[in-house]
Image (tube, rainbow, N blue to C red; front, side, top):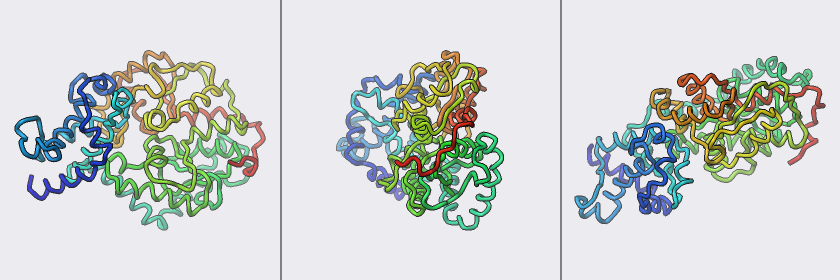
Amino acid sequence: MDAVTRTKLKHLFESKLNSAMRLYLDTCARCGVCVKACHVYASSPQTRYSAVGRAEVIRKIFKRYFALQGRFAPWLGEVLPFEDSTLDIVSEAAWSCTGCRRCMTYCPFGIDTQMIMSIAKLLLIGADKEPKLLTMLSDMSIAKSEGLAETLPGFIQAVTDLGPEIRALWSGSGDAPVVTVGKENARVLYVALAGKHSIIPAAAIMNAAGESWTLSAFEAVNFAAFLGDPQKSKIIAGRIHDEAVRLRVKEVAIVECGTAFRVMKYMSGPHPFKVVAFVELIARYLREGRIRLDKTRFQGSLTYHDPCQIARNGGVIEEPRYVISHLTDSFVELQPNRGDNWCCGGGGGLVALGEKDFRMKSARVKADQMKDSRAQTICTACENCHTQLTDVNEHYALGMKVEFLSRLVAEALVTDVPTATPNQFVH
């Protein structure tokens, strides 16, 4: 590694050293409480797969360049200099972590391993050693906003063509358009993912509730957040912020995507509108009597996977259970659950990267948890979780059904409930 690159990486590392980060890097007592909190370690018990093992890689670099001992007498302790071999270790640490932050809830000092891994990912970007697929996907998201005028007509037509499938779930909309894109002064801007599966159930539910809503022209997922590029992540989130401001909406509802929700609500600055996870919107409709569900539509036992970014890191925990209580009386909890739930193993960009071998090996503890529930169906409120749970279900031959919570709700809608008018409910 040349001197110019070393200097660049040192500056990137230093740019992350706020007071909280210095506390995390200085404080670890090596108590080991966090070790068994990691699903990867629980599935493959190796020190490198523990929270402290990953963080120690970054601590050794920190000691080498930002601690007195490392700068003046590096031979007195364990340090890591900026070398190509060091970045190989950094890469393994960064991309064996899903950023679920379960370890943080166990740590007596509250050390945030995900924040420490943000240094790792930034160093890899600086050394041009990051996963190129995530870079490409991030750049494509940014480019979409720049070429929106060219792609928007085709997107609107594709969404319009979904009308029959939406009406198959909710037929109370008559001849009115079942989806609009970019309508001004709607109360809710719904931000979906690429794919009709994220639009059809949501449209049926919001139409059934008589919601004044419109569909975003952008997808919710923020690939740059997975990548660990704060500048690109800000640009991608900024597209949705600017669209919501331009359309003068009151609320932005994020599709079932954990990272998209957390980035938009907690990591993209203040907004003149409210940000909610879509499951929160469903729970509100049920509380207000705007929709009603038929419990006879769902058959068998059901369990729920709490997505890390929505539940543990986003605080949306009881709302999904409230929704499920209207779906079935045969609900069983995973053990553990809520903020203590095991990560599915697909977060942090791992699902987007496509590689399955590590994801399946590191998800053994999740597979055991699913099997022990004895539930026939597992549902969740996150795209990455749904994909990972589907792969885990197949890999470990669990014989379960894997569903999106919103899809179950849409299929259970009672169609004889009078549709509310958009102005009937004001928040």
